[in-house]
Image (tube, one colour):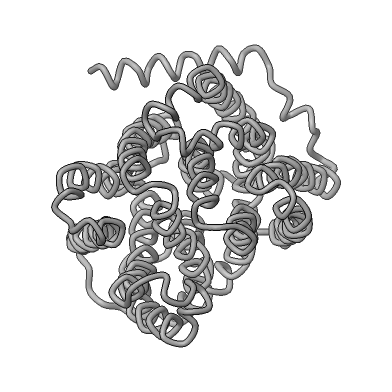
Length: 439
């Protein structure tokens, strides 16, 4: 396995993420404008359900695969064999879940049966897709990882623009979702054969490796699941207390936040791979501090752009029905910094063997968010959901930082204080990235 080049990997993932963000923005704008808040609320709720259910079925193995490849030097054939077996199991379980609890999860009569079935398939596909991504970066195949990152969104964007109008008027939301699931199915299948060829795949069942993957991954699962619940509890409560129309408006603001946070998550994946191979906390904190500089600068640029252009862009591109999303975004500014920096610091802690506090901190934050959202949403609507996020996410980051430096007295918090040289290094890296893109 080749040596990990952190700058190269971040350059690739950042460039790929920029392309993905642009394609995602275009596709989301298109659907938001022509579906309207009500149907868009139904559309995005399917992805919210997926984000909650697939992690429950995955049990954190998508995170432990990278750790196993880098730290334990596990056999990729055995890891991918395990992924294929559990893809089949997840497919059966997700179908069973929606047969038994579909009305309770999605609402009685909200979606036709074909969409419920497509959601079941998508949950299992998304799990396998994530494991393919993690294995690609765990084997330091950054180009494959970048392709997996960009292709679903880009392909969907190019297909939905013309095909949206080919769907019957009453079926455009459902048709759009089925198209996205079909794109994911094709891309996951193509990369299945690509991975098999790269690793000279032969089925190999290694029960001790499966047991270790799930044992290690379970801690990651609890941590990530609590983090997902922390970020989506307000969405579920807003649907309960409000309407699909309110959800559609609020989710536009959340989509803007997600675009920013996805960049943090993509950098975090590269860092987890690097930190898992680097058993030195001080060196890891030095790297993390430099990444904080990059993330803070990116956050500020995005926030400034939204503050200046937000009302005009939303009115022009999404219609005045969505203008409330601008105000919600402004309320979410503290949440942006808490979420992005918290995600990066949480990744650093995961690389230390997924300590139990990475489960406790988001669990405490989730409980706080449920309580605050339950008080604020009935009174302030989606603005109350935004307020709850802006209170909870910075607290989550603070909890993680305090715990780490209390339990690691040999490390100093000064390691995270940004220095002038960090800014110079990030500037050099961004120039190099710009030149690579132009080249």
